[in-house]
Length: 226
Ligand SMILES: *Cc1c(COP(=O)(O)O)cnc(C)c1O
Image (tube, rainbow, N blue to C red; front, side, top):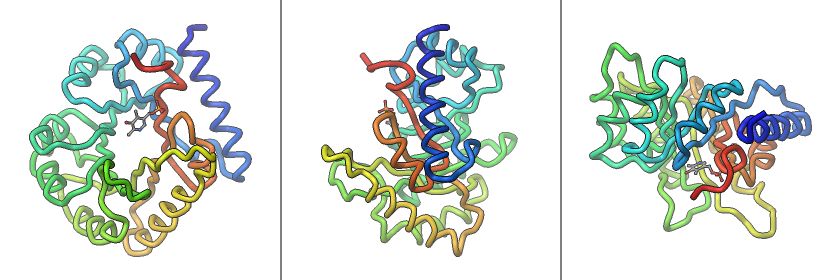
């Protein structure tokens, strides 16, 4: 077994245990392997170990990897901050964009999505911990932004994404709970929303306990990034 395969097995069992603890089905949580700054050979190891969803944060780095792994039926998630001069690359090459936090960006992505690819799957990013440095819309702005994004023909609004601040005291459940409550509120008017994208290597258990349906795991699969 390769290093990557062994780490993947370990992450999958963490997800299973977290689901069991939350009385959730294991298949209610999808694993996105975050492969930013990871060489394409390591991605191949993950693919050989059955991983099909990958997350990238830098467009320039992602596009060559996607070309090298074309034809393997992989699903590509853009999880970095969306810059307006990169929307065309995102719309033309990715399956999902998790970091939509402004209507202007959503409109560009929708207009630039090639119709033959079908709608781009998107999550609205929420700055759930209220950090100055983080992208994401303010929680109170999320309902209106979601309602507007849901109307765009080139996009399919799937849910919310957040990167809660890591807390040294380990009490990281609170922001995930706030995210879930916001998600449930918005879902009352936009029932198509089925995705809560939250949880990383250090906090996937807390995220799953609070309803995450997609966890984005990098270092626990590929090791520390160089
Ligand atoms: C890098 C990154 C991850 C993965 O982080 P790890 O701590 O390595 O698991 C998840 N989500 C986003 C948005 C990231 O940028």
